[in-house]
Length: 211
Image 1 (cartoon, one colour):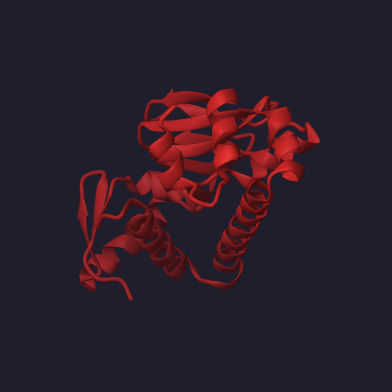
Image 2 (cartoon, rainbow, N blue to C red; image 1 turned 135 degrees about the horizontal axis):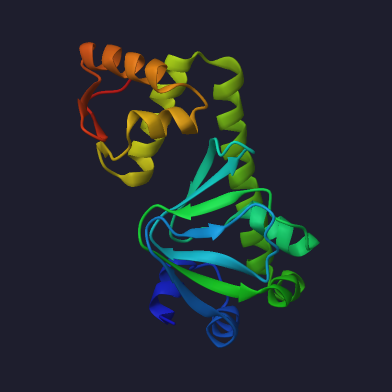
């Protein structure tokens, strides 16, 4: 395991905690498209993201997806931590958007470190808070905004997360994640293109200027 990478991504961890992570955890690699978590899965470890990008989402009985948030290097999934600590089955899905590298920490260490290391307890609580705030923003946009506003928020979120103006998603993929139809999303994107906000390409969208 790369100690410099851990130091860079988790600078608040005590040196002794980093040493324990090195000694007791393992590195796992996932290709783009691989599933990291499935609904109904029980966790034997929690994962910290070292490299790549992970999409966290819900899936209904018909296979429709509801996008929740992304996980980037230096982050962990709060919902998986909750399920792990309570030994409950996962109610979320997680998929690698890019080739991804994670640290897998066995469950009993996660619980032990909560009382042993202040920096670990702080990291876990900040992870809970960040994901809760992220979910609140998502719920606000679903509950209080029209679909065109939700779509613009969705694209801006991807632009910030991916750090690129090229969003590599098809109209159908966007419709699935926004729980809409491809026809509605295509119509709204076409309107945005006419307003000079985006440029539509095959299976991708180029962001020109969003408000």
